[in-house]
Image (cartoon, rainbow, N blue to C red; front, side, top):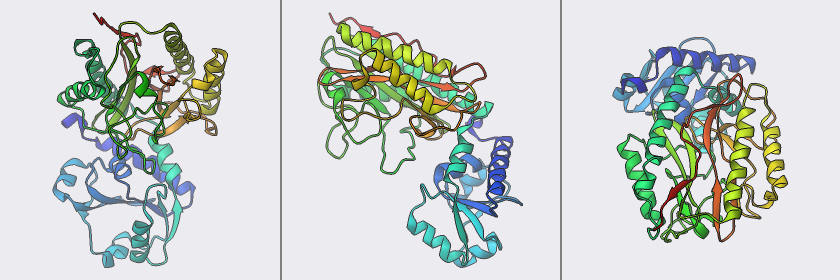
Amino acid sequence: MESLLTPSSESARRLEILRAGLAGQRLDGALLLQAVDVLWVSGTRQNAALWVPVEGEPLLLVRKSLERARAESPLPRVVPFPASRDLGGVLGPSRRLGLTLDTVPVAVQQFWTRALPGVEWSDVSGLVRQSRSVKSPWELERMRETARLLSGVFREVPSFLRPGMREVDLAAEIEVRMRRAGNEGSPRVRGFNQEFFMGLAIAGGAATAASYFDGPVTGRGLSPSSPVGASLDVIGRDVPVLLDYTAIQGGYVTDMSRIAVCGRLAPEIERAFRVARDIQEELASALSPGAVPSQLFAVAQRRADEAGLGDRFMGPPGAQARFVGHGIGLELDELPVLAPGFDAPMLLGQTVAIEPKFVFPGKGAVGIENTWAVGERGGERLTALPDDLIVVNAA
């Protein structure tokens, strides 16, 4: 538990980065209201609002639990949330304030507008997300620990994967092992109306079903209300079994995919798996400061097209995801995104899950995914598990 508490040096570093950005936008300060943004600076995920002035000490206003927030946060000023009529006096005369409008509901913004008459809001969503995207050595070590948990569970898959078991039973075997190893649960997702469970254990034709989640492979799920992930379908012989899971410790997420098979893959599917691995290696070697995310996506798409697999790249035809990698950290969908339109050069210490995948309608999905850190000489791999096909004897 002690190693998962945010050190005061980490909180101070993050405050310095955030304040510099706020000053650059000529703001008096920012109100962080989204829980993960508050956690990033304060070190606690309690029900709280964080006031960050450009000058002066930050103030964590806690609704519940004040006791836990004081025990977990390195910030010196952790106080009960005051009555709304007193908020103006607590925050002072600041008038140009930042708010993450990508996540804060209109009703919440209206509450704060009433509490702070005359306030002028400015959207600092991009600033906060960009600031969070660069991980410190302390954060990278948290992610390595999480990756070790995930890799350890994946190594156990050959001991329980068998043809004839249902997708949901395979998922349950993985997920109970994850929890016993200390996994905190499902990853946090910033995108509006996006939800994700721990991961996907899906096989054959069921793995090729299209659904709402913004990813290349989603699975059929169990019902229209939960149309993602494992289904009740039985896993057959000689079909690709896609294992795409996240793990979380101390709030930090890593993401990894492997392909298993009970028997042998068809030659065309095994070839696509090799192409996915080659694309991953080419992109990972380019993860250095200054690399442009949109250009890396273009490289991946070109390689898929050259292999004759462009129409199956990152999803079934007509339902393809327009990215090949996503930032990851305290949330599953952070910056940077390896996708068209993302042209800001990458920075040292950013973390990215690279996931080239191919979908063969009615037959299955294959690919690879690992979590990487942007390094001086290319990507530093955090999920240290071999990329080999997991082969289970189907006899």
